[in-house]
Amino acid sequence: MNPNLNILILAAGLGTRMRSNLAKVLHKLDGRPLINHVCETASELSPRSIYTVVGHQADDVKAAVLNELTEDKARFALQKQQLGTGDAVNAAREFLENDDSTLLVLSGDVPMITAETLAALVRVHSESGAACTVLSVHLKDPSGYGRVIRNSENNFQQIVEQKDATDEQRKVSEINSGIYCFDTRKLYAALSRVGNSNAQGEYYLTDVPQILAGDGETIAIHVCNDPREVEGVNDRRQLSAMEKVIRRRTVEKLMLESGVSFIDPKSAYISAKASIGRDTVISQNVTIEGKTVIGENCTIRPGVRIVNSTIGNNVEIKDNSFITDSTVGDTCSVGPMAHLRGHAVMVEGSKVGNFVELKKTTLGKGSKASHLTYLGDATIGEKTNIGAGTITCNYDGKNKHATVIGDGVKIGSDTMLVAPITVGDGASTGAGSVVTKDVAENELVVGVPAKSLRR
Ligand code: UD1
Ligand code: MG
Image (cartoon, rainbow, N blue to C red; front, side):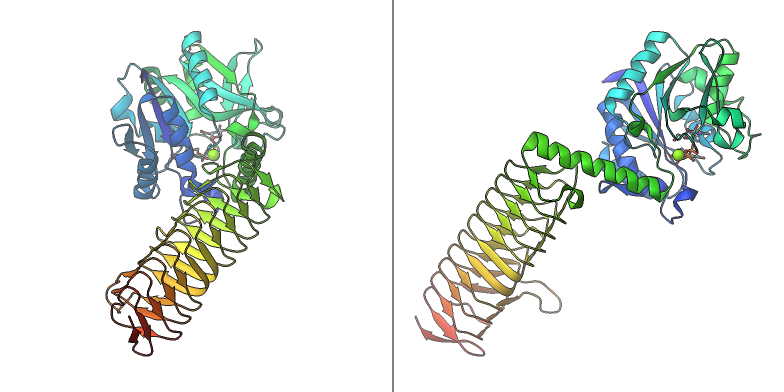
């Protein structure tokens, strides 16, 4: 842990430019809210505490933060009215103003920043003995950002917001990333002197370094070399551009480092949290979300979506299948157009064919459900064949009930298994049976309701 470092994340704004009912920092990038990206990076620096300033949809933003951080690290400050970034920092005054620490201020809407860059900023800050170190970057198109204005000695002079800048100042390509290190006490002392007589009538945090410089304090500037890292998300166009960058990076990394093939990298949508094994081939229009793990030598056909699931080695997932929160073992085959959900488990070598849905069901080793079937709340043994059109009738209108099917069972086409029900090893059901009572080992039942033909 770095006991001398605290982090403050500004996340109280609505984000007017998003034109959304959802607070900006809750909009998703790579499948996770913007604020989660910032929190994850912040925690990599092992600070004493991470404070988040919340305001708009405070409870939802808190919940998102607590999804990422442990309760002992996360602290919250409430900014009741959104009066600007300076006012946002002020919301945490009671917790921090007398703290002998370095405060790293991050923006909830700058999600691509890396821990390496932040660590470098903290290092420059402590080595320079500055009261404030601003992270800046040179942009081809700096419009919208605050500009970093340097004096004749090339040192920090001030930060001017786009809306307050003169035409001359707007030509400056060095922008304020909205990320800074401060001597915490000096920050809060100077913050009391920030006013709001500017184009937006807001209390700007960006006025603090200028106030400190006026007091004779050193203000350092650390220039970040990668403009992408410090891009802010202020509107949906910027959000989608960022999404595209992350997506391309993830796919390139999988190709170059993991040995995964992509038929059409541009149309594959893979979460940065997913892992995919060597020689797996991802077809066009495939979406892989969350912490999905896919093994080696798999084939993922067009239109497949896999969410938070684990897929073994040598698996084929055929066209337009949807798998969520489920596990598929080695050499299994899924789809086309299959649906696995609710912790479905396919054990090694099993097969699920077209228009088959598995919910909270385990399909045993080498077993097959090849066509038009619903298996819910079921446990199915090894080498069992589930005929076309079979349905586990698991819901009686009030409760869900279990179906247990043994090994080597043959369920005839269009069988209705009215749960709770057990079908013993080696048993069979005739086509079109409605099975309402348990079936013994090796028993054959047929009809509606099904009756025993032989044991
Ligand atoms: C800010 C900087 C600008 C910088 C840019 C970088 C100021 C005045 N300007 O502008 O110099 O180039 O970031 O991205 O700081 N927030 C609050 N409470 C508020 C206002 C904002 O918590 O009252 C939060 C927002 O939720 C957001 C962050 O602060 O996460 C930045 O606010 P935003 O309005 O996006 O500032 P920018 O206009 O981007
Ligand atoms: Mg912004």
